Image (cartoon, rainbow, N blue to C red; front, side):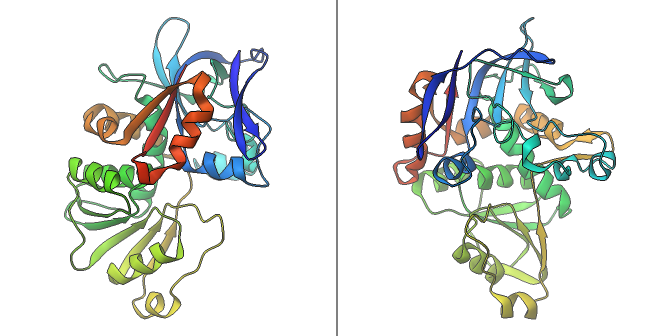
Amino acid sequence: MRAVRCDDGGVRVVDVPVARHEGVRVRIRSAGICGSDLQLVESAFAPEVTLGHEMAGELDDGTPVAIEPLVTCRTCDCCERGDYNLCREGPKSVIGVGLDGGMAEEIVVPERCLAPLAPGVSVADASLIEPLAVAVHGIRRVGVGPGARVAVIGGGSIGLCALAAAQAAGAEVALVARHDAQRAAGERLGAGSVKGEYDVVVDCAGSASALGEAVSVARPGGTLLLLGTYWSGMEMPGIPLCMKEIRVVPSSMYSRQGMVRDFDVAAGLLAARSAIADALITHRFPLAEAVRAFETARDRAAGAIKVVLEA
């Protein structure tokens, strides 16, 4: 089958054997290109497996599903308490990083990774459930509730997902975005412009300038949620952060609270708001055109937000 793998700072489409290990076969219909995929392929940590941790497809009987890309050990202390995103096995348990991912014609995964789609949710849009789950997890960690004022710094797909997740929790949300297409998508989702101070500020940009802006608009005693990925380290504005006693909360991937997975909450959010997919997915390419799709995903100034591969 065809699959997308790293190739000297970029990607290429190659032929690989169809997976024969145990699990449930999913015929992939959509796989999103994440900002972390762009960073990985250009880094010294470029994985040798098939890429893709944002994915959705159909079972052999036609059932549409999204896939939670964590094949964790289920036995360590973190997994046992429900924080399986912190599994002691680390990145090797993440599909698309340590295990073959969903930028392929099909994949075999444990049944526990499946998230059935609600009626009316297109499998072509359902790869968005993964980044939505990232946002749902972070918003849950900081306890955003009705009436909260939330500012999101960064208008990429994670920032727009954070906007939607905070709105679903009942918050009033403002967005700071760098590019015109991102600002327009935020407006479609009902984001306001930043005015005054905020109870929670979500950094989805992962840069020193974004952290500085986040601290500047947080109210004294407020909360800074870190959803961005800091590939080059982190530079905090120390004096204002400490003088305002801002609580800093990191967040990684998704897990569960009690018996409810963040991933399933995200699936419900996408089902409730089709406008999320309409606003975020800007480009679609067939799997065979993955090289062009990755080039498009890198060009944020040209309007790309979420680029999806379709098998």
